Length: 96
Image 1 (cartoon, rainbow, N blue to C red):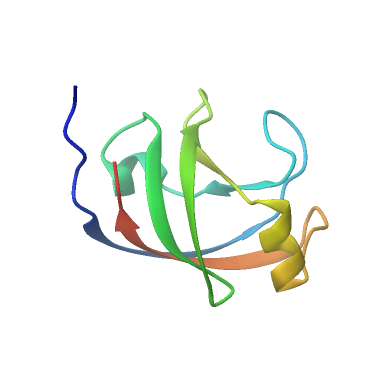
Image 2: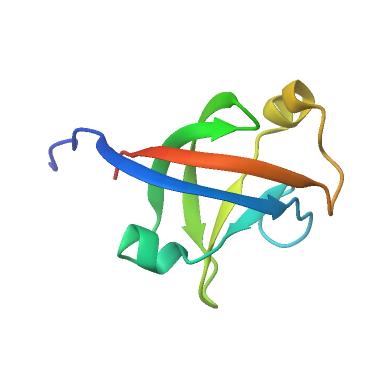
């Protein structure tokens, strides 16, 4: 059984448009994710979206960058759920 990792600091801020197709109902594409995470595998992260705290698992797209799914409750909290609307993320922790 693998031992859980302690959160590792991360400092990556980006703004990206909401997307609504493919594997997740609502998500954004994380720019330069392979370089930021050092892997093309799934990575659990924490931080803020438009100033509100969240955690999520960034999933590999298979074509390069990771996708970061946004839960419906979080979309409602920030008042943004339409495709094409920009959201700002600050990723400050990596859990995996």
